[in-house]
Image 1 (cartoon, rainbow, N blue to C red):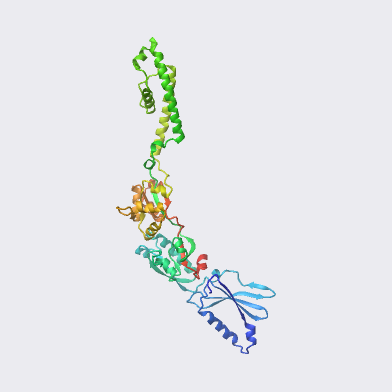
Image 2: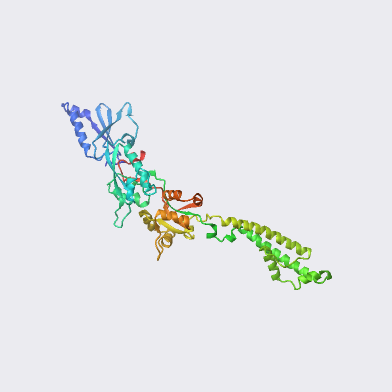
Length: 455
């Protein structure tokens, strides 16, 4: 009944009691009785219980009652007074979480999620930062919060953050918070819908996330590079130009043939062009010019020479621009892989960090894209599952067309230590889980929630 946000205002008329009894020691006796009344009640730092005591006339003394913890006795706070003439006069306007942050060496309990036993030996020495990085990041935060509250803390150890089992119970750290075995989680956890009704999250984010990390592949591995140098409208314009040149060349060669066959001065031309020109001749002239391989036709008339010169100039410009773009594209990486469908349809192989929460989340998704990534790339039937270590994943990113899903702080630290500078170029990420940054969690309706929050 005293748990926040309930508020209580209790009245005690001391004047009436003193008038009805001649015993002068009644006041002290009644004080002891009042203390005993609250001694075993759950009036903790989040409670709001005000005792208004009237001594004389309309003067009311206001006292706030709470206990720092189940291990400590009742505390009385002077909150001010009230009179009919002056109204309410507060001694302080500080909120309860500021007034009651001293827990008088209360023994709090927490829990650390550790996947490697060696982590316990390196919580503060910055060694092996890539192993259990979130736990090592959060550990000093918990010590700071507890120290600020003038409390002590002991840690339980578990190997998982807590998942809902088939029988409805929670395991790991979330289960400990649900059963009120610990006061605060010592390792940040993801904000997922299933945990909202089980634990209370504090908006203290650990800036890390789980993502697919990979090097952007060369453009030539994912696209038809021969169509990429020009935009679509350039290709259309080129096709129209070729048809125009083909038509003009056909008519100019035809006209040239019939004119020169009738003149005596064209004996040399007749030796080179003994046969009547055909459509295939025009095609090979066009093909030879644009492939820079030459052709046997020699224009004789001005009209044929103009058309041929136009063809040669255009093919030279086209060839120079096309080959320059091809050379650039062969050395370029693509940014076409931006979404999960792009990743699924790409030539990249995939792997996931072999850790408990990754397996849980990957196997819990039911949307077709994520499910296809798991079934086709991570756990393909008839092949070895691609649950790998961080070291193997980072090495394969370096040496193969490979996308690795892991904690990006750990992945980038290993890349910093092992990659050459030029090998760090072209790295990109894709979010698979679509979660917020991990947050610290406390008991549902924890009496220390606001104190933790302000800390």
